[in-house]
Image 1 (cartoon, helix red, strand yellow):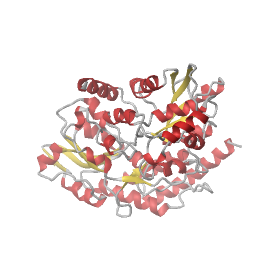
Image 2 (cartoon, one colour):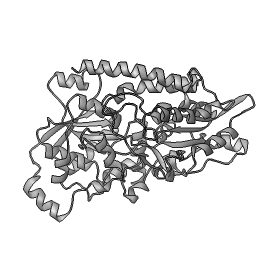
Image 3 (spheres, helix red, strand yellow):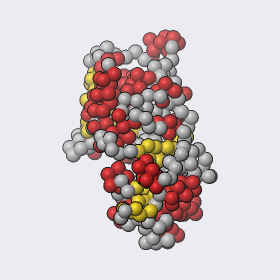
Image 4 (spheres, helix red, strand yellow):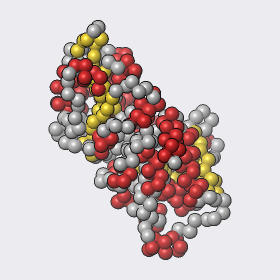
Length: 443
């Protein structure tokens, strides 16, 4: 049996999907009282039913078949799931134009506004109450973040596992330079000093101390900064805080030998994993990519992401796929049963085995993270659970539209093309124009 699990888990990562199904203990639906209530109000039809599952989050075929479809077949043999991929001919726009909206939707938190703009959001609050689904199974702050993504605190989806950011490091580089490895719980200031020690040229190779996944860290920043005011839609009302964030991370690229250019700015993962001239890399979950590479010569490990003094113990905001129900699905109770099954302990355990950190309190599930993956054998998997989620702020519905502009301003500042003040001032004007254009389109 153990060999079978290894094969399944490895197959998941070879398909490199975004993840699915986090889990709630099998006690997510309450016990005896809930069973009595179910008999009265939540009877699930035994008639055969097919539900369409729109895969906006981009999970792989085998992940869908094994972590989503298989558990449903086992629990509800009468329910068939038909996955619809977000490709030409079956995009959300295509489905709506054809009058065939999906029944279930799997979308990332950053994609939620797309669903809202399409009018396919559905508040599951009443279904959660009727089915006695226990929201306390989630870590503190998780459901608060979900509610803040909706205009009036609605629950438009239940979140699967988090795309937890960590600091990954190349042990060979540290060994070669005789420098102690990174530790859990470091601040960015401590990480900067460590980066200076491993930024040097040896044997004609320039080793860089630190690289980062820039857009990921900006979009889900640990300081919970938003770009637009959620009421007025005016940009950069907290420009000084954005400037401080820019300059804090820019310090790493002012270290001689660790400077970036247009190519290296976007090449952090490749330089860390393949070229291997980067000692430390801060990014979202790399476990799938490392397992897929299947290179035993890569001598790496991981620790918790560095934190800011003003946000101690905070990683980034929640970045997770959501299981959602379309308002057009005919049998919403049946659809919710499918969603609820994704949060059972058994489904979550299989998800955790593939290296995906849970958003739930269940300690047994947390201990399963990556247990059957070769890439994580002997690694510091405790790093996944050290930091807490940064609070998710209330966003303007145009926030996603202006994020590329902020990312461009950050790149200009980091590369020294413009000072932070100038980059942010010009970004503000560009954002105003984009927001105004969006408002005109929606009139």
